[in-house]
Image (cartoon, rainbow, N blue to C red; front, top):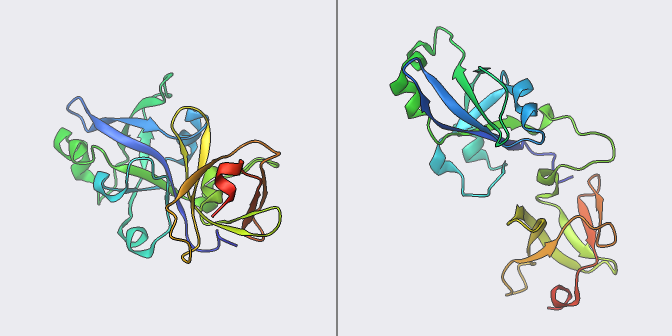
Length: 201
């Protein structure tokens, strides 16, 4: 299965320092936003430059090795935009985080959690679990590999990278309509019935 290798999921981002006591603003990337609160003890982070905008999964060894553990203490619940105040939980190794300067040094950092820590309700699929699946049509023709799931405001899109023998650039197929896609995580495939403009070479 595509998810057998270690996978770390982006669940939030530290925005900026707030006040002088080491507090900062956190943006939740979970659904619902409050789900991040139950993960605060299991987080790790990467600097802002480590991920591209819209990237929500880390599965390469180099970045996984660069992950830095961090535990947060939430100072309230997320507001309507998923923003809440938090601070780094103090340990003997993190006393420096009690200052504004140390908190500001974390600004922009991506918060991640191991995929194994996320509980998925029965019958539902996390978008990140689609990344790395082999996409094929109903006749068994390989369309490529799912590179990412992106949402530009009109609903989720699968970004598909065609097989290496195909010179075509990556393309998008809308995700979410049952008549268009059937997912089998155990086999590592997603069967798609895309619109005609995506079905050809």
